[in-house]
Amino acid sequence: MKLSTIPTLLRIHNAVFGALTVIISGLLFTKDLVVLGWGVVAYIALAAAGNVINDIYDIEVDKINKPHRPLPSGAISIKEAKIIYILLVITGLIAAAKSSHIIGNPLPLLIAIIFAGIGILYSAKLKLLGFIGNITVGCSFSIGYIYGWVITGMIVDLAKIITVLLFFIVSTTLLVAREIIKGIEDVKGDALRNVKTLARTRGIPFASKVAALFLLVAIISFTILPFIKVISWTFIPFMIVGDIAAFLSLVYALKGEEGAPKASFYAKIGAFVGLVGFLVGVIPVAGL
Image (cartoon, rainbow, N blue to C red; front, side, top):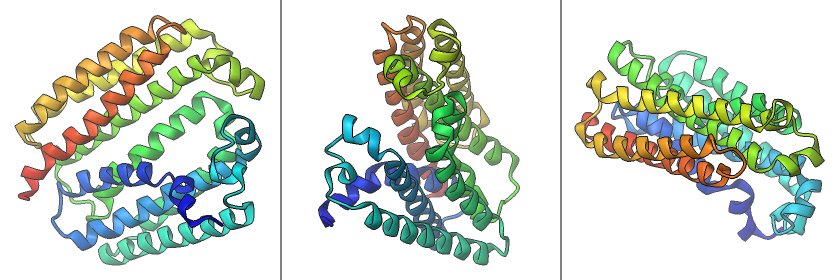
């Protein structure tokens, strides 16, 4: 096993990036870095585990499409990948169990178990079901916002809870829209693998409209956030840029296959700007 390829197998940058969702929502309710730390460890470990199991299931396809990846290239064996996966899941569940112990509630551990199970289910089945798989991807990344609130003891503060839910909605809708758009881009390749994307089962025009609807929900939810008056005004410049990116994605999405590459790009920009904006907006509230 080439140790240098493990971060690539784990897609560790994506897992760390996603863990910011836990920090963002968690900071609304606590400054306790130990509490937040256990949440981050659980998210990173289980997200990375999901990436590993996905590569295990995709190895035959990746031998053709991504032969440079650690598994198809032989840098890491299937057996070694399974061991890494098991260790990551154990680490994630231990961290979640610690969070459950801290707040005296089994919910963090229960969410972690479900998260780990969905990782397997997605790789084995849901990915091929198209729209259901799209929803799974969006929710799996964004669940960190909900998890960040749960590990802090589920403090009842209506304005902050609404803020967290809006974080979740913006992130999920942007990611689901991008997954639908990617299905429009890859409609020919997906036909070879019999992936039942909206573009294949209902047609590209229908898929474009559904993606546009999700993007519209993201824009509306994004724009509502400052009016809840929880996060700092420092979020507003990011909101403006994020709204513009999401709107451009919507415009290109409605152009169908021709506009799909740019629609996907702008949706990705919107999601990134949104995540950074959420963090920038929350830090002053936390007094950091």
